[in-house]
View 1 (cartoon, rainbow, N blue to C red):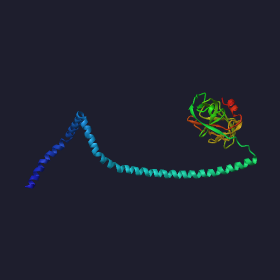
View 2 (cartoon, one colour):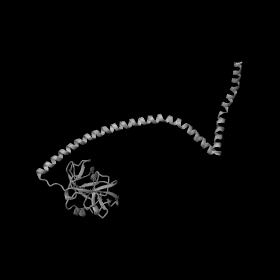
View 3 (cartoon, rainbow, N blue to C red):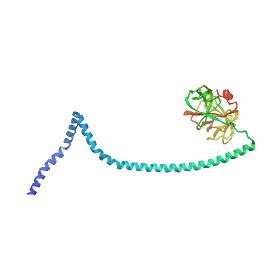
View 4 (cartoon, rainbow, N blue to C red):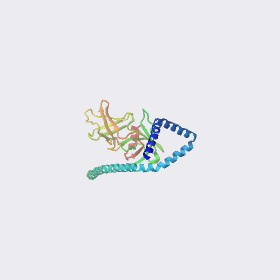
Length: 289
């Protein structure tokens, strides 16, 4: 009797299965339309049901995500350790180089002091500085200048050098009670006695209201090389010798062009340094207007 019953059930189920397979797509479409209609009719109930389903699956999703998050954290930790190791190696090498330079600087300082004592050299006057913030750049095609938040009340006076982190930027030409104006190296009125560090060739650096300056009064056979550093020569009492100004950018038909060390378009803070040079204020009034 049992085999007959099983055969009957199979014979009855086969047509139903075929019918379900034939109309399955239509049934799914109708079910989707019904769900959309229910969502439109009773949105609150659908939202509540969706929230309950989300709450029910949240622990499962959290459990699934933990291994992935843990693996990502482990990978991130390994990368950070590798980066820290490489940074540590780089800093160790840099520290070793700085220690060598420190020893060389100490040796040269001792030698310099010994030679000064033998030559009875007059020591250079001590310098003082004021840090000021740039608040305006009232420049144009005819003027390259900056305005800073330091004036006479802060000890600023005409002739002081304006220096950014990378080198000389300009010179104080006007001093008010609360602010001062700095004429930049690239201004057409700027003239600075300089010397090329390697060849020791002296020249005058002049601005022409462009982003670079040019060197004047160089002999035609002067051995100028691109990339050579340009520093102040100390002539004329405008600046002390050795202040970094820029590097030779090009040598050609346009003459020798110098790229200033400091990006004059992005200067935010300046140091106004008083080197205590006699007569610098008078020179500033005459040469930097």
